[in-house]
Length: 342
Image (cartoon, rainbow, N blue to C red; front, side, top):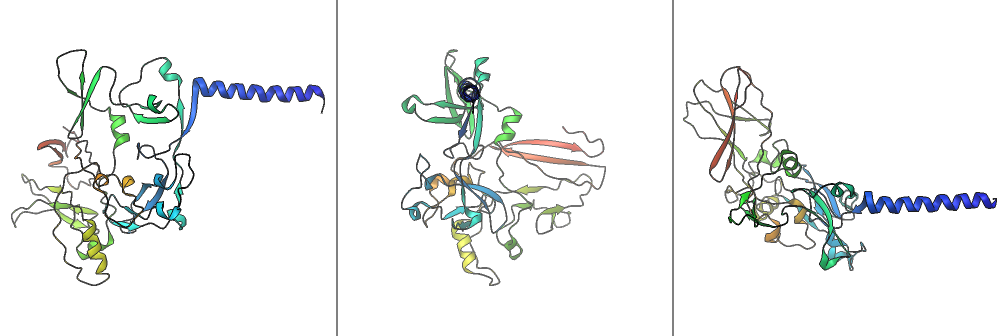
């Protein structure tokens, strides 16, 4: 190879490195998410799992299996994930890290754009990468909630902010834009994913018709509780209500001990609960013990959403969707003749 060719190759490599460093410094930079503090929006080291009871696919943290530098913790047997809990049916099941379908994956890979904040300040609800002064060597990624000169308060799952420059001491609720809200929603219950064991009467169906007089038509379950049907009469409201009925680990264990025996072992009646900040991502356990309280969802949430498919067989009457938050009822009424929603 001639000297000119060698020089041209070296110059090309140097220019490529310079451009790469400039791009990384001013335009964008790639990161690997190390932990699950932003899950499920962004996930650290995790497992992709499917519940053996209802089939729901979800992710569970495996960050405790490795050190901060990514090297395995030793002895490995002590830190491997042994169990997880399904967010749909709340069945806790064993995880075998030796099986291919239970293997662990590295954290999400993202590319962070740097130039937008050269033309404007960060906005509330943005996801940003930053360095905390106390640990400047480490990159943090969080969703931005508070802005300069603000005091933040969280009350029953809602975010309130006080602008300390105004001096009026008033906290004002901060509503998420629709796009941000949709990105942050987590599934609470999917009627299409019903445990096969429900045919035997456990657990109690969460969708139940509101009690009416014996002579009034009411909602009837179909397709193993995956759908409901009613032939309503004029001027009569018939409601199908969702109740957050969650089996406990002890109840699932008692039913499991009964095996295929019919009828199933009797368990305590399920009690309705508030919808909380439970996240299956946080239920990974490296030992055989109950899930710690901080992982089961201790705080009720109010950002609720309802999605359904409604098949209408008549063009008269109304269909009403209702969400209840803190005793307040929020309704959307559909006029079945005109299709107008109010």
